[in-house]
Every structure is written in C-alpha cells, then in structure tokens.
Length: 148
Image 1 (cartoon, rainbow, N blue to C red):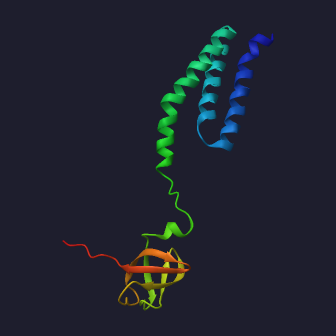
Image 2 (cartoon, one colour):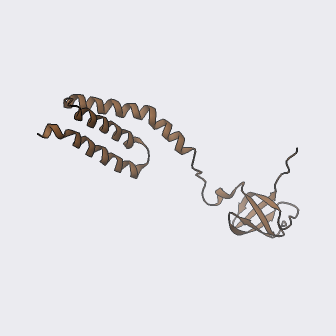
Image 3 (cartoon, rainbow, N blue to C red):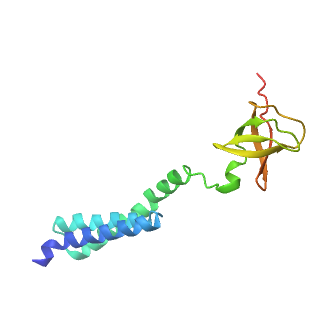
C-alpha cells in the first residue's frame, strides 16, 4: 500500500524544497523541487522507484541548466542594488533655496537636503543633478541642456 502513495512523498519533498527556496532565493532549491515534482508524476503513473529517481534527477538538472539562468538574469536586472548615499548619485533634484558654492537646499528623493555647487549659483525651482555627496550635503550641478 505504501508504494502506491510514494507520489505523496515526492510531493512533500517538493514542498520542503520550495520552503527552503523561500529562504535562499537563489532558484537552486526551486529547480530541485521541480525535479521532485517530476518524480511525483512518474510515481503517480506507476513507474518503479529507480525510474522515479532518474526522472527527478533529469528534470532537476534540466531545470538548473535551462530555467535557472533565465530567472537569474530576469530578476537580477530588475533590482537596483545601490543603497544609502550611492543611491542618490546621478539623481535629479529641485532647488528649494538658492544653491551656491557655500550653501543651499534641494528636494532630493522626497527629502530636503543641504546642497552646494562646485561653482556658480543655481536659483530656486531649477532642476539639478547630484554629482556627489559630502557628508550630509549634496554637491549638485545644473542638468545639462539637450541640443536639438
């Protein structure tokens, strides 16, 4: 009787592997879970255990070499890994109070920042780009004009 329900064991293994994948998020355990599902299907179709194991291994390896690279590329390109200060470099901001080489304020990413320029002054309402961050001060410059 146990042999007729081995597909449930394969299914349980797949669920455990999916849970492990949720913690690692590297798509390896998800591919192994796919292999376990293949073993479950083979078992449900009445294949002997040796065939089930071979099906599980072939499906898992196939998924690891075909689907996993695609998923890694797809999800890696979606996320911006810049955090903290480096996330603001190159961002645009709007001048709130006149910005000079000594002082000023800008609205950057929804927050008010102290700012200064490398040279010259920029009036309120103008758009600027963040060149670098010095401590808690954004060093900004005018957005380059686009020639048409």
